[in-house]
Length: 362
Image 1: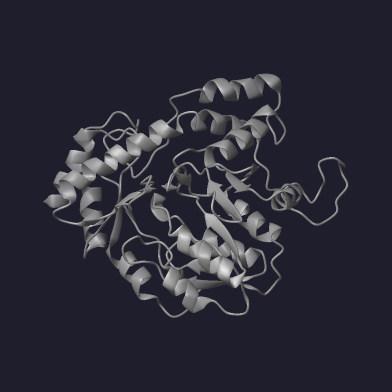
Image 2 (image 1 turned 135 degrees about the vertical axis):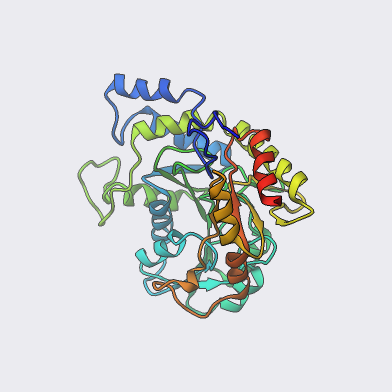
C-alpha cells in the first residue's frame, strides 16, 4: 500500500495541510510589496472575508488560537479571580487562556455521545463566581449551543465559543462561532484551513472587538500611534500568514465536502464494529478529526503504526493533569480511555481509507 497525494511516502499521516489554490501567488504578492509583517492588505481582507463566512460583524486576526482565547476572555473585562466553566475533554489551551486572564477554569463533564460539554454538567458547576462558559466544538462536531445560550442568559454570564477545530460546522444553518458573545478559531497547520500558526476572534459586539484590537497591539490605539492606554500584548498575525489564510478560505467548502465524504466512507465500512463520530439532526459536523471508540486504543494505535498508519489518542482529560488536577469526570475519562482519531485530511483517497479499515477490522 503506497500513498502519493500527501507527499510523505508510504506513511498515511493523521493530517497534512493542502495548498492547492492561490497560496503561492498571494504570498509572493506580499514579498513583492515588502509588506510581510502585521500591516498589509491581506490582514484586513482575511478578517473581512472570515467574518462574512462565519456570519459575524467583526473578526480580528491573532498570532494563534491560544492568544485569540486569551484576548476574548480579557476583552470581556471579567474580574480577576472569577470562575469560567470549560469542558474536561479539550486541548489544554482552553483552560490555559482562562488562567492567563486571571480567572479559574472550572471543569465540566462532556456528553457521552457528542463528547462536547454537557449542559447538565454546566448547571451543576455554576456558582456565584461564574462569569463565563467556554463550550468547545470538539473535533469538528458542534456543541449544544441552544441550551448553553439559554443557561448563560438565565445566569447572566458570557459565552465564548472555542471553535478552534470547527471551521464551517453548523447548527440550523448557522455557523459555529456565531452564537456566543465572542468566539475563536485556530489556523494551526493541522486545521481545516491553516496559516501555519494563527488565530481569529469573532464577535457581533463592537466594544469587545475594539478591546481585542487594542490588546493584541501592545495596548495601542490604531488612530493614535505609539499612545498606549493599557498594557497589551503582541498577538498580531503577519500579512504573510493572512495571505495564506485568504487563499485557504477560498477553498474551505471544498475541503469540508472532502472531509465529510471521508467520514461517510469510514462510516460505511466501520459502523458494524465500532462506536463512531456522527452528527445531530439539523447540524453539520466538519469531522476535523474522525474518531472511533474501542476498548484498547493504545494497542490498536501501535498496530496501525506498524502498518504505516498514523493515529492519535483523544486529549487527556484536563482533570487528570497537574495544572488542573481535580476529581475525575466519568464521561471525559471514558472517552479518553476508548477514543482514537484516524487519518482524515482532505485528499485522503478511498483506497487509503479501505486500507486503514482493513487493518482496523483485522
